[in-house]
Image (cartoon, rainbow, N blue to C red; front, side):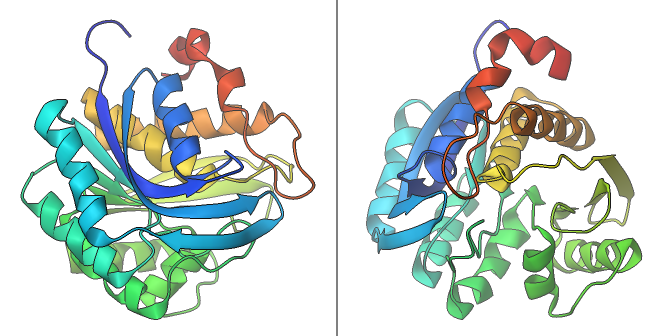
Length: 271
């Protein structure tokens, strides 16, 4: 991993406890050998047990952060996480449409602790971002909300991802971490209907805070490096698995992953 690092602009909320959001994104991009920049959408007071307070930044300030990064350093890929409001989602969509940059959209709706991070209007505004995204990464509850139906079993999950991908013209990575059983199954569906199944053993741990943020940021870093989408997904999934196994055991609730324990020295074994 020599030469110029992939430049990744992360648009997301701040997690004061460091386990998810911007903080997890920066750790992930850095550990994957990328250069992380940020446009913060919200400030949260949270820890492993829940979200205690949220203050949203204005859409104008979010766009100003994006402009500052792109005007000087530039970017090879973008990752979008928590947006916080419909107005922010629309503003980000308008700005990114002007760039042509590939981006990963993690449609954050609910925190690991159960706190709601997107209201109905914000979720409704996700459509424009999905139509622009290279790949959208919903977990099962988010996929149900976007598809407007309950999902039972792998066949229904894959079918919902296929419908979403075809309807919005983006790839969809339907994440199975919220499912049952000893295996986690993710489905990558392209707009033309190609389906790739990824599976791995479920890791028995309560320390899962920030898994979605971590996966999406790792995915954006690999896309920024020039990897194919399927290869980027494979690498990102393995990075998350390593970070789960290396969780430091912090906090009384859903603890953070062990991003730093994976480390740059082990990147070769993950890539």
